[in-house]
Length: 217
View 1 (tube, one colour):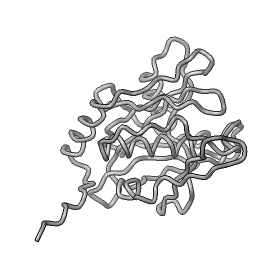
View 2: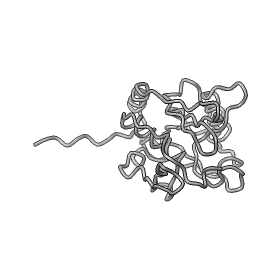
View 3: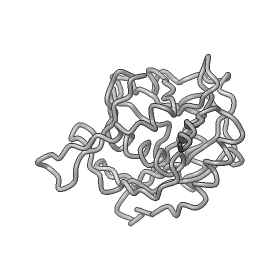
View 4: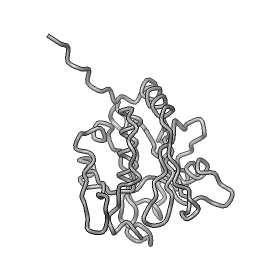
């Protein structure tokens, strides 16, 4: 008789940070900074979930009244200011959108740049966010904040791939029961690669996956 494999441990604990940091350090992130794309940084915030010992990833819902990507799920982030590095932009945008103060010591790794249909090279940074008690979302940029359980992100039902007439590559999406909604690329693509690299230790690439037409503007 063989032993059953141990169930994954999604506890928000130092061991999880060490494991994620080690996997991310072995991963070589690919660049999409061609000069034709504007640069933007996003933050993947691994944080403790309320009323749980498990870890989750923070995701925001953008207000419907804003001009760009209104009503869409997103990761904290935005375009770089003049003279700013991508890491500095990810830290600043997290502070401006969520009221959370990060430092460079909280960074545990980076992922591939993701070229968006709206003309940006999205540069993902993964942070260990141990304390979210000071979180105060800016209502002009954030309508809601949700925590996606790592157990949901680690589901074999992710990703969903749908080939559309407008593209030779499928559109990537993911359904999250916690949200009751489907999240689409680019956000879903970045979350999927985070799962593959930081949680499963795989060198999965996602830049070729397309986005739905509503995300192009």
